[in-house]
Amino acid sequence: MIEVRQVSKTFNGQQVLFDINHSFEEGKVNLIIGQSGQGKSVLAKCIVGLYEPDAGQVLFDQRNFTDMERNERSQIRQEIGMLFQGAALFDSMTVEQNIMFPLQMFTKKTRAEIQARTDFCLDRVNLAGRNKLMPSECSGGMQKRVGIARAIAMNPRYLFCDEPNSGLDPKTSIVIDKLIRDITQEYKITTVVITHDMNSVMEIGDRIIFIHQGKKWWEGDRHSIITANNPEIESFVYASSFMKEIRTQLQKK
Amino acid sequence: MNLLKQFGRYILMLSVVFSRPNRWHIFWKQTITEIEHIGINSLPIVALMSTFMGAVIALQTASSMESPLLPDYTVGFITQSSTILEFSPTILSLILAGKVGSNVASEIGTMRVTEQIDALEIMGVNSLNYLVLPKITAALVFFPVLVVFSMALSMFGGWLALLVSDLTTTEIYILGIRSFFNPFHITYALTKTLVFGFLIVSVASFHGYYVKGGSLDVGKASTQAVVNSSVAILIANFILTQLMLLS
Ligand SMILES: Nc1ncnc2c1ncn2[C@@H]1O[C@H](COP(=O)(O)OP(=O)(O)O)[C@@H](O)[C@H]1O
Ligand SMILES: [Mg+2]
Image 1: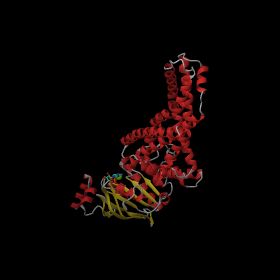
Image 2: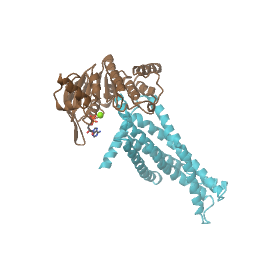
Image 3: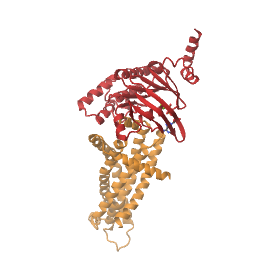
Image 4: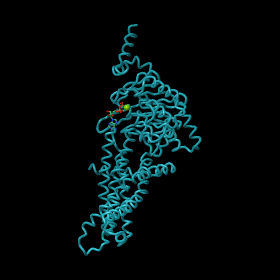
């Protein structure tokens, strides 16, 4: 469980996050949704410490991350896996080396154990045998999957995914979403996914918070979001005419 | 004020860079790769530049030697001393500031804007230490090699030019090169080289690491890196010359 307590963040006099409070639950896919530029990525980066919050605290299973020194943080970070919006694979390394990297850096595993773990992770994201490809030779969807494989290499307790299906076709998106959900349930990790894709929301949204203008505007799950009585949520959920049409049809009944 | 702030940030960066690597074998592997990137790949340009530089110094000296009071071997001597004292360490470093500095800044800058640095940090890696320390080490190890190589080639270039233009004989040129040779000048030149190599790589890393925005900003940062490391070299050159040759 990750607890966020009264986190605020300001950039150059412009406040981006206002007093965010939330608990992200273990074994669940916790979604952060909202329109672009509302502060979702900043919130995620404040949680993992890529940005320092101006106020507030973040606790990873009761451990106060915010007050820690660099070395102590490094310990917790080895329990965090993160999939970045652009996958952020190390482009000078092969697919395999990307996944091996954290294992070589932080574990005392032998070469053979590292190879086995790498192959396992690649297999887990359906990329078995693609070990020697360079990131530049992979499609967007493959890069995301390698990103996931790298994120889970160290058996993380916490998994963060920033817009895992941006730039992907709907079918590949669903594959990625399912992968994230399965991994979360299988290993009982605390997963936080940022998205603005309603498909993902309906597919994997166990717990959802809606961020608007830097505030936690609403929280619920994939069932309650459909009927949420809130104009900003409605305009988010029913942004597409497809969804609007469905709602009108439902309301007629 | 802004300059002071930047400088403070630069010093802070260095204090993070110089920490113990998490895994020595990864550090050494990176360092070898960087020696190849930063050092070996610079050999062609260093060779080309040094040969022509030596040739031109020798020709210019020969052309201005009208006084019969100057001994014949002056050409060799001047080529030797100006190469060792100034041309090889300083001009070479300025050229490398352009080549290596822009490479390093754009490499690290690209890693920043594509979130690869964030990915390192998230894993718990000290990204500055991991990325920058091998580059600095490689520069400290290999820049002296480049400079000695450059010195030798400059003198060779000078000899070739004089011979082709029929301005002196090999014996006299070599006599000139060997006259008044001061070993301390080599120490001075190599000290300068180490300082310049450090400045080039650390300043370029600084500009790359703290870049904000997209690929356009990476381009700007790498230009800034070249300009600032060149200025740093010029200032350091002045200070080191004061300290080492005149006191
Ligand atoms: N490093 C930064 N410096 C200044 N402003 C930033 C920075 N990162 C994000 N912002 C601003 O914070 C706001 C929220 O950004 P972000 O969290 O990336 O939005 P999103 O919800 O689309 O992920 C935006 O207005 C953005 O311009
Ligand atoms: Mg974002």
